[in-house]
Image (cartoon, rainbow, N blue to C red):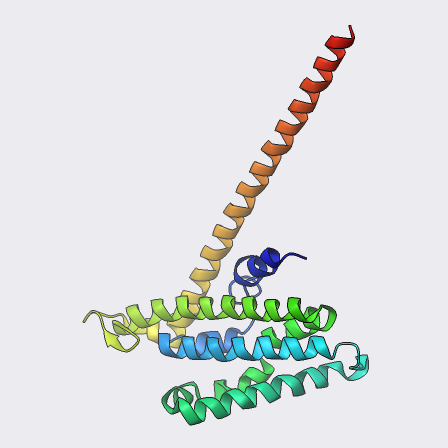
Length: 224
């Protein structure tokens, strides 16, 4: 397993929001502002990395029959730490995110990575998986929030950029609209890149075959 593959999977190929469509509830709820998106992304990234590391360390001692409850307890521990830190040092952000901070415990992205990756891989790989999945999640939230906040309110990070705005983008309907459009754009771009890479690989393979045929022909000519 290569670090490059883990990074590409987390951010692009298996992007948790636009590809796997995980964590949709907080994505739609907190992406009304860029500040909320950054805060939620940072919280999820922290919980992902820490829970992945601990679950990977304990993967050989957690019984299979109780692995899901154990995973949830581990995740809940780190979510509690996040909540305490936000409440103490970032009270405005804590109030703004509201119920969606404790709901990180049941975020399907975190539990999915614990079950499908951290529980069966070494600590270093598990940490990197959590890191890049968290980056992919945060990146997706920020893109949605940037579009919705700018078009819906004319602001970025609460600072007015333009007086004109289309308020529907700041509503739930606008969130679903932006979400759907971004998924379509992401899938189209991903498919285009994938097809281009396949085409290049095919051309490279054809070139190798041609060079081999030329080498065989040259060898036959020398023998004759």
